[in-house]
Each structure stands twice: as structure tokens, then as C-alpha cells.
Length: 537
Image (cartoon, rainbow, N blue to C red; front, side, top):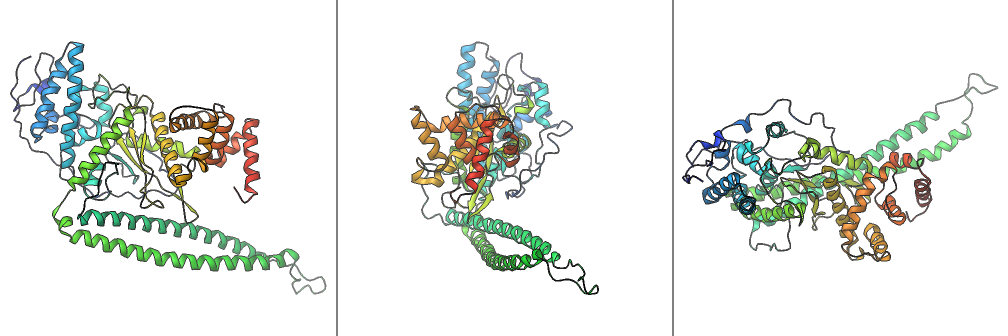
């Protein structure tokens, strides 16, 4: 191998790409990136329909011959180490050498990655952004058709969903719009008033959004009653002539008289709802003032005005993200972090870019209609968790947090999904299954082995004398539930099917379809009707 000066990012060897063979100065301009404010309010009625999956034309960003040097610009010693190892890895011929440099490459990449995320709240160039987002260190390491595919992935769809690429997520965490993920090792920092205020802000925002959701539910109830009132009162204006006095309307009929009492009950319900809505609007106004007050305190505090990025939060989140990445890969998976043709073999449908993930989650919610429902003050609220898209070759999605333990009512959970799995549907289902299990377990608290979804499943697990992690069994059964049982193919054990039917119910249209497919589902359907008549359902 020919020796190359450390001041230039170039490859050695006769097979090196011309775009990288040019000696370039190590210190380069970082380029620019628009640092727009992020919003993360979830939809209330379902995921949006994806009208366009990909851009029609290729972007030129991955054809830039200076992409590689811009990706490593101003990276210090960690960039130099990454460059040196990448040279050796790319030119190695012997399998033993390839394996050695592969491990070194993994360590060097994540070391450099940790430095780049600290720059995320400033203006970073596109190559650094896509290095974070896709693991795209050197575009020509991919096959031409794959490079073209990635260049057509939509950069910012504006879909207003809590689904984020790595660069977007760290920008939210670093700017304080989302707090860092909790870890068992994390210790609270004493005296950090700004961190305390941000925790209060997130809780206040959660209360604000929860109250707004309740107002919307109550308003829907009121509109339904008003329509019913209109129908009942319209009946009172329907008359027939009196037999003996044709010019006079006859008396009210029995059905019209019955409407009197019904109208009175509707009016009482409307009066009650009006009081509740009035109270909620007052609470909403107060919560809005609380949010503004906390925001003002943050902006006026020394930390809020002097720091553009919370480096401690970035470090904490980086450690959490690395653990998530390892979990998506598993012990037998491929931990190599760089996008190359050696390991990237996914078809477009199995790549976890944002629009594809939204389609998969919509498919999940179409059947598992309560997947993202949490009950707050006896009202169901749809709260989609934060979804972090990890550029790994993992096959398993994971739930990192079911919800914020300080705000169980309205806070979002956090799940992570690998972008390059063998089967994206399975990766998404494992994430949702893990999320479903952990939410149910946390809500049941100390009774998780006795009550609800986790209690019933755990008791069945014990009755079968099964060994191992009960959650892993549940995840596999959930995959069968969502891929086979939803199609009427019986794969689950009878008792498990009954547990899932009750605690992970299919949508009503799907239930109506399944009951006519087989006596097994028809029996479960009839049990629904029987439970609906009792107070214990």
C-alpha cells in the first residue's frame, strides 16, 4: 500500500476511485444547512396517506466528487483515524485483513459519529448530515442503482409525524425540544436549572396537548347529541289534521310524546358537556400560560441564552442511541455501520426511510387499531411514539421507553427501527410488539403478572412451562397475529388467540370479516357481544 499524507483524504491502490484519489486539503468549509425549527404534534385520526414515496429525479449530492472530504471536514483526529482505517479496509484483499479492518472501521466510525452529532445544532453540510442519516460515508461504495435510490429519498416531507432520522433527532435533543432518553446509568445533574425547566416544559406541553385532546373528544360528543336533538325535535313538527277539525293539527302521537323525555335527557347531557368543556377550556388556557411562563424562564436563563446546544444531552442520547443500535442488530447481526455494497442488499420496499415507515405503521394500525391508544381521564387518546430511524443492518425494532414515567398520561414513548433489515415489516412489528408489551406492563405496574394483557399472557406462559424471556415469546406471537391471524390463518395457540382478541383487538371491520371466515373467529366475536352486555368488559 502506498503511504498517503494524513492531511489529505485519499485512497491508495490501483482500484481507488478517481473522485477520492485527488489530494485535497484536510481543512475544508463545512457547507451550510438550513436549521429549521422542528414540530412534533401527532395526528389524531391516523397516519397521513403517502402520495409520493420518492423524488422523481436523482439528487446530485451523492455525485459530488468532494462528498467524502466534506463528510470528514474539520473532524480532527477522529476523522483522520476513520480515513486511515477506511483506506485499509477498502483496499484489503485477504479475508483475515478485511475482518480485522472491519472491526477497526466500526470503532472509528462511531468515534467520529459522536463528534459530528455535537455539531448538529449548527450548520453542517449535506455529506455530514447524510453520514449521520444513512451511514453514507462514501457514496461510490454503493452500487450505482443503490446510490440513485438514496439520492431520491425525500429530504423533508413536511408530514408532521414524530418519525425522525438520526440528524433530526439529535437536533431536537440538542436544542432542548425533546429531552434525552433515560438510561439506568444516567444520573440527574444537580444545579442544572435549565434541564429542570425543560423537564417541566415537556410535562406542561403534555398536559396542554392532553387537555386539547379531551376538548376535541367532548366537542365530538356534543355535536353527536346536537344532531340527535335536532332529529328528535324535528319529529314534533310533523302533524296530521284532526279528523273533526281539518284546519287544526291533531294531538301529538305516542312516539312524539316519548320524544319529550328523550329531549329532556339530551338537554341535561348537553348542559353537563357544556360545563365540562368550559372547565377544560379554562384548564387549557392555564396550561398555555404555564407553557409560556416556563419558555420565558428558559429563554431568559443564562444557560438558555448562552448555549445553542446541550452537549450533555447530546452525549447522553448518543450513548442511548448506540445501545438501541446494538439491540436492533442483536448478537448474531452485522454491526458494520457504513453503507456499502458489501452489506447493503435491501430492496426499496425493505428500506426504512420515513415514508416507508409511515406506510408500515399505517398498515399496523389498520388492524391493531389500539396500538397507539392510551386512556386519559377515561378517554382514549392516540399518542404515536417517537420513532427513531437507525442506519443499521439490524432486523429488530425495539421500544426504548413506553412513555415518560413523570407523564404517563400524554407523553410519547420511544421506539427505534433499523433502516436496512432483511424484512422491514418484521422489524416494524417487533418494535410495535415491544412497545405494546412495555406500555401494558408499566400501566399494570406491580400487577403485571396478574392483570391485563401481560398478566394473562404470563399466566398462559407459565401454564405451558415455557422457558426463556416471556416478552420474546409475546413478540413472536404478535408477529403471527399481525401477519397470519389477521388474514384468517390460524397460527396461534387457542388461549393466546383469545388473549390477543380481547387485549389487542382487531379493528371492527376486520373482526366483521373474520367472523365469517371460520367458526373459531365467530366464537370470539360472540364473546365480544356477551362481554359488551356485562359491566366487566
